[in-house]
Image (tube, rainbow, N blue to C red; front, side, top):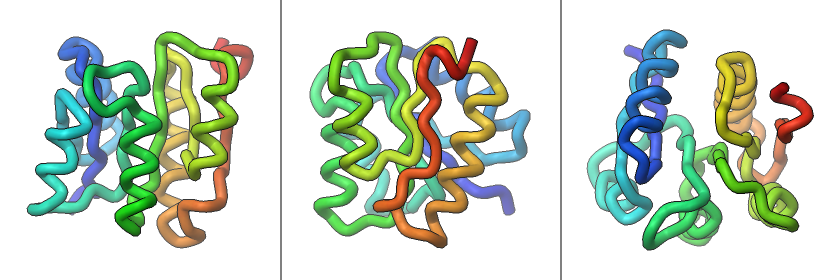
Length: 138
């Protein structure tokens, strides 16, 4: 059975693109339009990692990450954003994000981030593995 990766993004075309990418990498994507929808689904299943957009109505990506940690869930989180803000990268990594990616995310960046997230399941979410900023992705 393929490992489940959650995609949490309010932008439907982005969810669709990430879903296709994850399928091509042999993962089983599950998609959610909001952080709230994601947490509701956690009652029934647990993904191996989550790719979470920062800028969404309601719970933002960092909010989702902090709630995952507060609830003691061992779900590695990859934060993605199209709008990098001063200090956001540091806040996300300090909160335990496995990776911080800027949109548009290329295949190699996402692949590396997911591999780091899967490794984080054994080493623990408090040890960030990679950071991919704009300069790393271009």
